[in-house]
Image: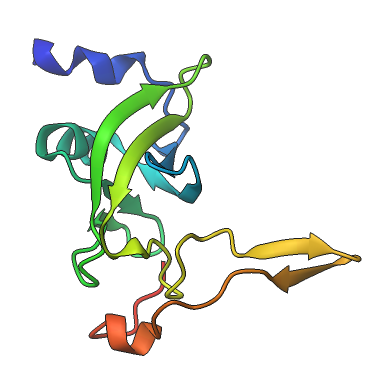
Length: 134
């Protein structure tokens, strides 16, 4: 399909994946990093909501399909080397991380160790119907 030629401009890794950064459009905060394959990126572009490739489950993963914390994609960008996708998103519910936090980067390096710097906003047990980790 000639409409999908834009996908060929991306430098996919040997497994056909590219890292994807979800950045909150309103705050500029990086919410999470995940992986996409051609199908997930195409679905993201077509539907306007983030779809990733789950390496652990080996299947497509629509962000928020279980939790309701969907990511509406406002803009897609490709870095200068064409090997990282950046998505500017609106994060539904204010929670992007499966730990119940606003973002996945909640640990800060301090005095030679990783310390938790951001609070849990909602208990993951209340968010997910089954215990699936990404």
